[in-house]
Image 1 (cartoon, rainbow, N blue to C red):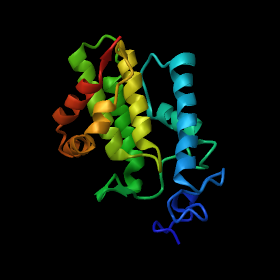
Image 2: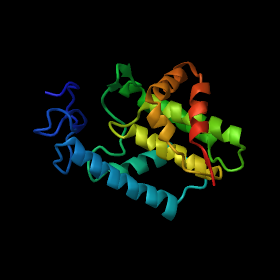
Image 3: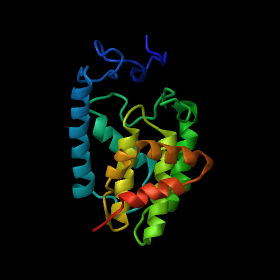
Image 4: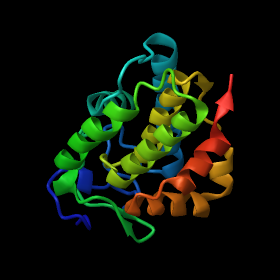
Length: 205
């Protein structure tokens, strides 16, 4: 029995995975194989977004759901859908699933509408826009899986809209504890720590 106790496949794990791999269409039961599958599909999504149909205008939650579905739709039946389970990481509980419709509507209308598109922003404005939207989306954690990577895709799109390259996340990977602390600071709407990490990752063309 899943620890989430829900009927949806979101709360089920792949057989023989030791409750490590979520139930999926491909029958993948090992972390290495799943990581590889998700990476290949993410690279395909990046190519599609940046080389085939780059979004120049205002971004939206509907667009985020579309990206998620295009990325993971061949793996999970719930790709692109708001999660129906409550999830936590490292003892930190993300937004309750029951609040997602309200929170995503607010994210659409308050954050994405205000901070995108990013064309015409100066560097400080762009850093602020990316930092705030990144923190807020991570705290909402709208999907069952893939929230961090989708949040980075959003940040990359915003950076390119603003005339910069996609972000370089090496400093984040090397300072994960500080990055997580910057996310947590956003609970009290303190975005200064995340602005530091966005500044570290921003690359001029």
